[in-house]
Length: 64
Image 1 (cartoon, rainbow, N blue to C red):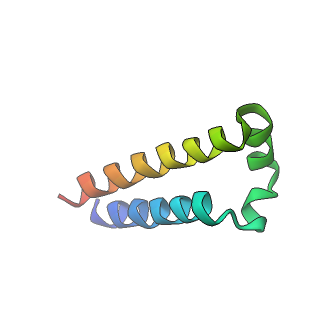
Image 2 (cartoon, one colour):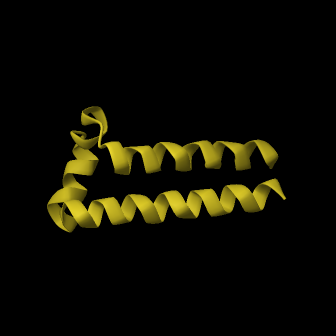
């Protein structure tokens, strides 16, 4: 379970980085473009923060 917790924390960091830096390779992907089309850019960023926060919370909980 500790390995899964660490992987979730790393995933959360990647998601937060993607929301902040908006790297072209991620933001031009089909799925993210669909999210931007439906939710708007701010909504997509908020979704990234929610998913990243959930992954971070679950990862920390699994570590302890």
